[in-house]
Image 1 (cartoon, rainbow, N blue to C red):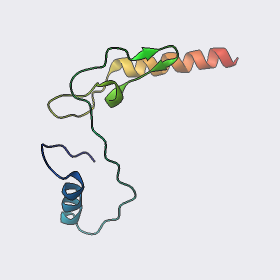
Image 2: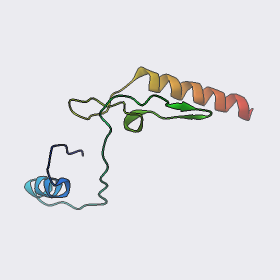
Image 3: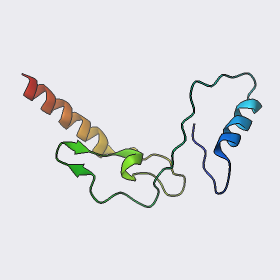
Length: 87
């Protein structure tokens, strides 16, 4: 679940939402900012490719993730390369 807003207490907002839904249990809470100022310039370095929120590939309007065909293509390339090098 994600929470976004200016000058809000994220923890309180999540707790209030969960209480409104009735009985619940929390496994873990992790809070981290999402970069929304556009993609980073260098997202490929040697054998590392940064994608998704970590690469700034999020919608600035909602800070939601963007499904990218490039991400699935990259996964297929890496899977194929892995199978080729392990054979």
